[in-house]
Image (cartoon, rainbow, N blue to C red):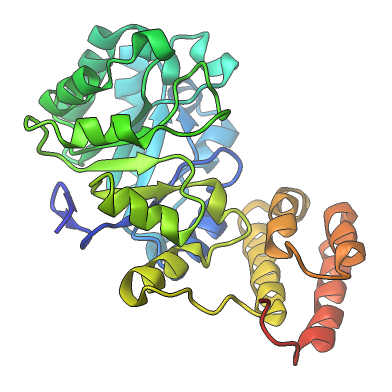
Amino acid sequence: MVKIGDIELGNFPLLLAPMEDVSDPPFRALCKENGADVVYTEFISSEGLIRDAVKSVMKLDIYEKERPVGIQIFGANLDSMLKAVDIVEKTNPDIIDINFGCPVKKVVCKGAGAGILKNIDKMENLTREMVKRTNLPVTVKTRLGWDDNSIKIIEVAERIQDAGAKAIAIHGRTRAQMYKGQADWSKIADVKNNQRMKIPVFGNGDVSSPEKAIEMRDKYGLDGAMIGRASIGNPWFFNEVKYFIKNNSHKKPPSIYERIVMAERHLKMAIDWKGEKLGVLETRRHYSNYFKNIPNFKEHRMKMVTSDYSVDLYKLFSALKNTYKEVPVLN
């Protein structure tokens, strides 16, 4: 039984990764409904929270049906991070997660995200002080290191654990790699195989199929998989992995009709949460994956990503549901 603090997650849990402009409440709820064991918010700036910035505060919204849910914050200033913990705690999440892995320049140049991998002492101290500040379990997401010449992930994981973190998720690339190349799960396995490690070690990066998730469990011995890009426009992915684990065969993929219904639900939930304009705009990134590899569908997909009004999208979805109601599942 894998646990984050007192939260029981079963054997080999599947976690939705925090993804900027993707892991919002509607998407998290759909992933939870389709098998995700834990969902994380997109990362939230500690500086934005303490300034009461609208965009940062909005990211604190959570639905009860998402639980257990972790709110992820990032920053490099201890005082700001502790004040952010106080603000986050009032929204009553199940977990507080620290982002020590974001590779984006605007984050790392301030010493936050993966930038803190250059200063492991500060990384440990931030974690320790944040753990002291809250009664909620604190988890950490990070990368293998800053670059290939500075990979100290075994030491980092030990010190994060010693500071009181209840779990660590590791992306199998360095900051220098960004998202290029292949994730190196063997170095994450080295952390898990370290006899000093007692907290769960979750793998992240390139979990693109049920077979990959099984490999992460069986070959590399990790405690769970944190899934990111494979879930975009594909919230069914979590249940597909679980079905494969249980049956050693692939779950029947969703039909075109089911994809249309899910995309329409996603749009409605997004509009209900963030309003017409943003709801329509920010759901666009999901459509290409919702309707990937469907023959003769390009024209419809183009309408979805260019329509500015929900009324037009709902008309399109209604017409498509009539067209594809009896169409069998994709092979």
